[in-house]
Structure formats: structure tokens, C-alpha cells
Length: 298
Length: 186
Picture 1 (spheres, each protein chain N blue to C red):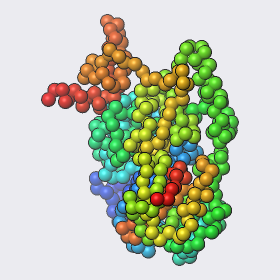
Picture 2 (picture 1 turned 120 degrees about the vertical axis):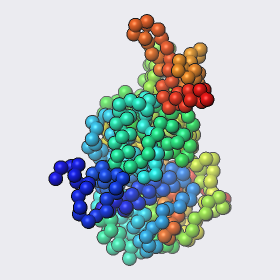
Picture 3 (picture 1 turned 60 degrees about the horizontal axis):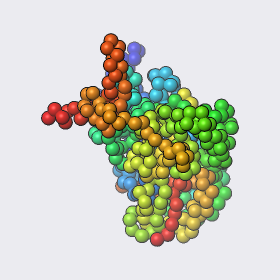
Picture 4 (picture 1 turned 30 degrees about the horizontal axis):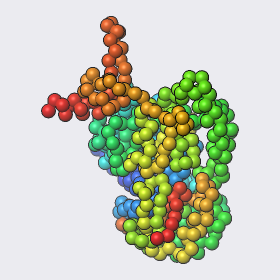
């Protein structure tokens, strides 16, 4: 039987007339979802610790957000409102594809409005707008291991986490200061979660790191290719690694503003015009930018 | 599996996740079909044949769980999930899994069947991740000494166990105390 005819088969079972995607609710088989759910609960109970899990094949390639997608699919419910962003943008191909896919297999409503969403899946950004305790942010993670820069062996990094032996990470930062006068990590800035684990906050810019600290929202991190899930629960201390004489600092956009909405308090992308060579700045968070423009035009 | 059951599992899990990420807060679960099967309907979103389960003080639940969720019954020392029946003696918990320093997620999850849960009402005080400053929780129908047993099991963080407290009714309630929470007495 061709796939498109399968949902319409007459086998006496009830079929949801609205969502005949041909797949079970949430796409994955129940065994896969159950394993992911157990991993999520342990991840929440041990903030910052990476829980191994058996990452499943998804209809997108590993490295394109399968970790985040599996988390989203394991916890989504029909009345959820989903937002998916890719580097702040609602309209990028990856974000649109994931959003369409989840909407099809779970029948949920989608949005671009951060405040309206109940689940936000994101790649490399945390939305500018404040998120509440009713929302969950699912982050796609390429490299879950913050210590990978200093140690290639998984066995060894696991031992380092077990013993909280983070001296090599500190040394790496110190050497950076010796070479360049400051810590040069621009994204994937390592943080200490709940005073215990050094954790990779995914490739969010430094700008977003303070938003993880004592937030109202639950942050779930999924690394599909690397088969790890970890979490930062609400109201948890998240401290970027820093030295007394070299404190952590975020990107500086003083004197710059968004060319579309005029925002001066958002993370800006620099865009260079190919013909004129003119540099301009735009909000990285497209939902935030659109909302501001709408408010201004009223 | 029937579509309705699958969706029910999703909704149940979201409630459990909310409870685990907000320790001490009492959450209302979606209405279950029957009071007798409430524990199975609660755990159906988590258990399958990869999970070792031990039930203390509720033999009827054991066979139902195996039949409905296909989980394996094992001893308390090997169990990933331990269900402590209402007011059951949980001395067996002393030897339960708390995980290893390399893999602390190997620690067991313990489900206590209790009489009632009430937040912000004396009882115990919790603080730590997921808790905005402090929160108090009163658990009725929990055997004496259980909380100090939990404190002992969780004394070497990140080793430890994660506790869920479930009021076994059709309109069930749930609250959690993960190992990251500090338990104090009011």
C-alpha cells in the first residue's frame, strides 16, 4: 500500500481526521520516547550532567538538530504552541523544516511569537524576550562536552567530571589570557552549573549566557549525534568561568542599533553590503525584531 | 498502541517533568481511568522492558505493572525504579542504586505512594535547583524516617536517588524531590 493511502485505510480503528500524517503521535516509537524521557528526568535531577542515551534515526541528518528534535517529540502535547528558531531566526530553512515536521506529526500550532510559545526549540540563541516558568526551551547541541577542547578522550573527560577535576580547563583559559590578554571564547562559553559541573551551554553567544542564570524557564539540551541529554532547571546558578582580574563580559554593541527596528538592547548581527561595502546591524532574534516593528508602526 | 493512550502519556510526562524541575511544587495529573490503575497510568510514559522495577509492600501492583508496561521485576539493589507502597517499610532502600561518580544517572528513581500533598504548609522545606529561594511541602502518609533516609542516600551528591511522591487517585497529585534538593525541617 502506498504511504499516502495508509492513514486512510479502513481497519476499524479510529484515526484522527485532522492529523493524518501516517505516523504515530510524536513520530518516534514509544520505546524511544520512554528512554529519552527517563534521560530527561535524570538530567533535570543532576543539573549540568550529560546523560547518555540511544539517539534515534530522524528524518533529518545527525548534526541538524536531531537531539533537540527528539526531546521536543518526547514531551510535546497536542495543546502546545511551538516556536523553532535557528540562530534567532524563525524563517531559516532548518527551523522551518523542523517546525513543519513537528506540526505534522504532533498536530500542534506553531508561532513566531516568543511570549505565545510553550515549547521553543532553538539552535544557537536564547530569545531576547523574557521566558516564563510555563515555557520550555529546547537547545540543539553540536558538542555537549565543554572539556573537549582540552581533552579528546571521552573516558578521560568523564573521569574529570566525576572528580570535578577542572584544572586543565582553567589552565586553557589562563593560557588564552597570556596569549591574547583576555579569554577569547566567543560562543560555547563554559559555565559552572549548580556549583558542580562545567557545562557547555551550546553555541549561544556570550550575550545569552547570563540568561541561563536563575531563570524561570527549564532549559533542555539535546545532542543527537553525540547522544547526550542535559538540563539546566529553573532557579539554578549558572556561572561563566572567569578570573577575578578577567571577569566575564558579553559582546559590546555600544553605539550600534538595529537597522530594521532601532533596538539598542538586543544581540545584533553585522551585515556587510556586497556592492557598497556598507556595514549595518540587525537584530539576530527575528521574532523580537518583528514585534518591535509592529509596535512602532501602530 | 492506541493514539489516545500515546497522547495521555505525553501529557502525563509533561506533568512529571514540571514536578521534577520544580521540586516541592504539587502538580495535578490528568484524570486517570481508574484509581486502581493510576500507578500504571502514571508510569506508562516511562517504563518498558529495559527498566528494572522493584515494588515494596504492594504485591498486586507488581503483576499488573509487569503485564501493562512489560518492565522487569528485580530486587531493590538492582532496580531503576522502586515503588514504595502506602506506609510500607522501606528498609530495603538502604542498598538501592545511587549511581557512580562517572554515571550518577544510574541512581534509582523512587516513587512513594502517599495520602496527600500540600505545598506551602509547614512540613519540610526544600531549596536548591528548581526552587525559587525556599518552598515548603507537607507529605501525609509517609512512613516516619523516610525523609532522613532520603537525606542519607543523597548525602554524596551527585550520587543519590530522585524521589517522586504520588497521591494514588483518579485525580492524582505529584511532587518530586530530586537529589539536587536540600531537605530541611520547618
